[in-house]
Image 1 (cartoon, rainbow, N blue to C red):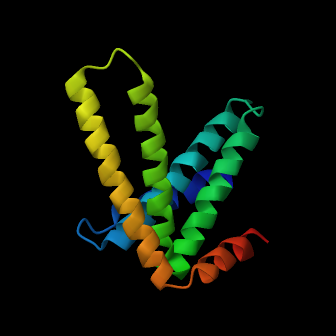
Image 2 (image 1 turned 180 degrees about the vertical axis):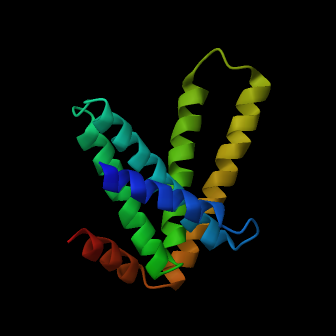
Length: 146
């Protein structure tokens, strides 16, 4: 547990040195690094409080984030796969709100516009990924799992 605490302190010092103005790809990398830091902090908290039951779920999240971070660090192309995934998740949330009957008409219009904008972004991501080698991205993902 002491080693994990030391690692978290080192990560904190690295985070403090992150430049504030950087490329979109690097900002995404930083955010994934911060996610790993947060998840590690959560695991450490649970261990210190003898709450072992929830650790496997959080560990899975850590591993998924770690794999995404590895893929992003190998190739900036993977960012488009992540952006597509995030946009699809956002559309699902919007669909859930739109199904809720008590939303005002103006809000429904705004959510529908936002949903259409996300669909355009997804198409752009797909089009860009099609110009790349989609098999390469899939192979990177599966090779990082093994």
